[in-house]
Picture (cartoon, rainbow, N blue to C red):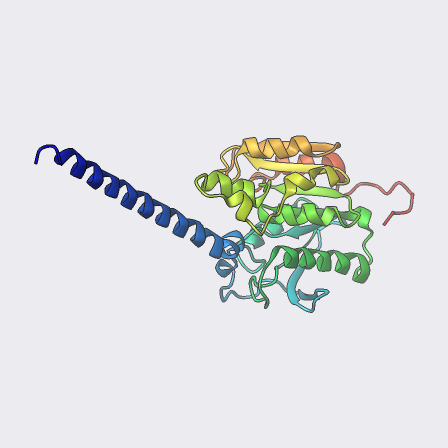
Length: 291
């Protein structure tokens, strides 16, 4: 009887180990599957923007994308004549009808004309967001400014916050512009997800890439990056790494803020950085604008 006890104990221990291994594997597979299934919802968080908000602008515009999606947009003219337009690409969960309004007005108060829009599936817009889709949305906004409003490309600053910064980076690889303003800049979705879920193979599973790090060398024109040292979504070290990949001329402004307010609130550092490359009331040189 005693000689059989170790064998029985060993068999029992093996069964426990197998059960634990199967349980852990099942839980891990389920968690990874949950991330994969909910990727689009987690990346865009469009559901947070689809609320019944009053239209706060006197002149709300509508754009039509190349694939027929109608988008809400707003145009804010600077109080004094300005040379430049800031084409603003919103962050995830953002809508021009919500809290984003205050930041658009802050940019306007710095002396710039501002043009902003909602992505497909955001705010009051129909459709479903996707990486390729929001790129089309930004291109539709750019074409509205250059073709409908006849604004020279050399007077359009492509801007975006968080996810919108990646949209602006992609747009800059497709069109001519005065340069880029990147706020709380996203390096890429896989890199960001890997920081939050180091236990999951998110770098390989992510279908929404928004890979600004991989596109940095293709950016054309001056770049101003504004990032908060207390950003908990995209650490300042990640912003510095992306900044190092961008070509000159460029400027990095590090603030003490977090992810959602970097550059806003105290507009002086942002105004100074913008004026370094794009003084809003700069006198024309007399040379024709180039497209």
